[in-house]
Image (cartoon, rainbow, N blue to C red; front, side, top):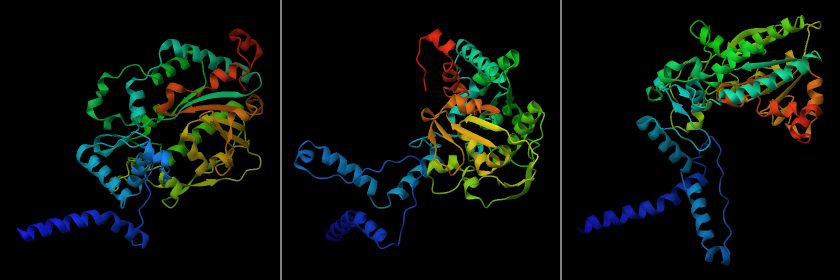
Amino acid sequence: MVELKKTIFVTICLILLLPAGIRLVQFLGYYQPSPLNGAFIHPPKPALTLKSFSDGKFQDKWMSYTEDNIGFHNLLIRLISQVNYSLFSMCVTRDIDVTIGKDNFLYDPYDIREYLGNNFMGKKYWEKEIQRIKFIQRKLLKRNINLLVVFAPGKANVFPEYIPDRFHIEQKKLSNYKYLVQRFTEEEVNFIDFNNLFRMMKDTASYPLYPKCGLHWSNTGVVFAMDSLVHYMERKKGKKMMNFSIAGMNNTNPDLLAYDVDAQDYLNLLFAIPAYEMPHPEMHFQPDTTAYMPKVIFISDSYYWQSFLLAIHEKVFKQARFWYYFNIAYTARIAPGVEIAKIDTLNEIYNSDFVVIMASEANYYRLGYGFLKKFKLLFPEERSKTNKPLPL
């Protein structure tokens, strides 16, 4: 009985000393935790004051601070995430949801919502937006500026076969994508449908069009899409643009590799999910001083970032602007962004050859990200109809 009490006593002492021991191991440099992915706000160490102690705020803040700095905190988070993923197929993170599909195919749940038609904005809403697009298209064409809407592909639309059965894809309804493609065709709105093209090529493409564990299209898919976009621009302007091609494939660019596993990274797992190989293109740009290099504005979500990494943005266009979610304007990947509200958007548009509005599947429902409404209100005759002041 005495031996049992001693064992229990020693065990309790070891448990109580474990956090201090772990902190000592980290302090001596024997273990350095790998940072967690996602949006984490680390609570600061609270200051002890009479007021904060008496009203209980110090205790609450100290508890949060202690929990965030406990020994092996990151490792334990990854352990819990791995258990939830492996045993229960659960993977809800702090800043983004990830849906686990069949064969551990990872999806953005908003892609699935769009594919199923669960976030359809309604015909009345879209008819108003289509009229705005046609208005912009006419206005710009008078200045020899071409407006183009690009439907970037969506993982759910291209690979619906891996969507979990609980979503009942056989019951899918009218989606924003389906309605817009039909109405754009009828109303002669300029658009490119990469969703349909990728779906048709997925079984014959030389390299994967989507990574298994990523939320964005593959880099070879980006090259294909940008090549198609360049050919479209050449036909519109009747001019030959710079020729670019894939010179080879490698897996050495960490920035490009990150897009293959961005969904997996958000899960903060202990072990990587088995996935197929994703070779990355090495780009070759054919020097040509006579090539037409248009000035282009891209109003897009994060799907356009990869054109920066592949150097297409800087090499093919003379003056390219990336208006990220019509919120921040970028000219180059390493250049700092500028708030859209602080630039003369109308002057920038009138100084361009093309305005490209691009959205991935998760963002079809907010095509233009507010640009369509704001552009129309830049004109006095349109503002007078709404009695609204100039927005910029």
